[in-house]
Length: 324
Image 1 (cartoon, rainbow, N blue to C red):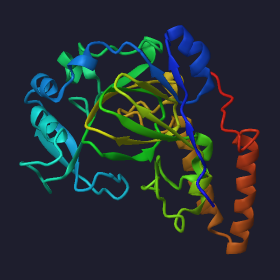
Image 2 (image 1 turned 60 degrees about the horizontal axis):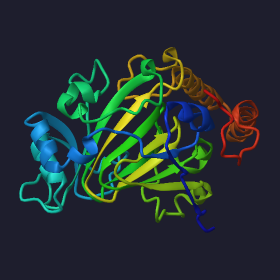
Image 3 (image 1 turned 180 degrees about the horizontal axis):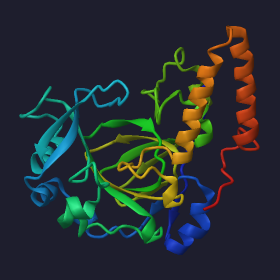
Image 4 (image 1 turned 90 degrees about the vertical axis):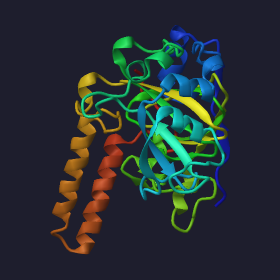
């Protein structure tokens, strides 16, 4: 079976908060917003400037000998560097100082000062950089959850995963390819938790992952200044075409009580979903008391019931009917 065509993510210009909430947000589809005012960061954030502003603050980073990072198999190590040294290395293609090899790749996802107590917030971790960055006013301020600084080496590719909150990926410098898959294609993505086991989405191993080609692929390339709206539960895979800097802004799509209060990364499933998945595991353990043929039969009945109760009316319809 040939892979499905790549559908472009629609691009919108001249979007303000009213247009976004009226015309884009209710569709629950990814969208590239072009021309949004992100502030002076677009002109200021060179590698040299970032290093000066970030200074000696220590940051925890991912370091890998290969540019395609795999969270499931952990083909990277965590290291700590002063921010200015990290930026210098990430912006290079070959390193005079390194941990593993002179061509290693670097990735930063900024963290709170105390990751056990609060989410990342650019204004708290990098206040001088936050003065340069203007959070797009596209959601209600009280729904804000976190703002995450992301910096990566050129060529770095991150694993396919979903987030449980809506987010804006603001590309400040460098170009980035983003591939997305609908939540309704979850059964084709070979999930392990919130991550896909298919690491190479461009040349997948179809012997191991034959159904992967059934997933509809959406794709865009973000230019500096572009903002990508990624609705909650949409899978995404990013490839830095150059050394790049971006900011992710997450906010709560559901009521605050729907989320795990201890979730400081914004990646735990909503509380009700977690309880449901735990109940499913208990039900499956109950079926273990039966012979294989019975487990098969009642497992199929359970699958049918889930389909009747939760699936959208048309399994192949990738347009969600949900409204905020």
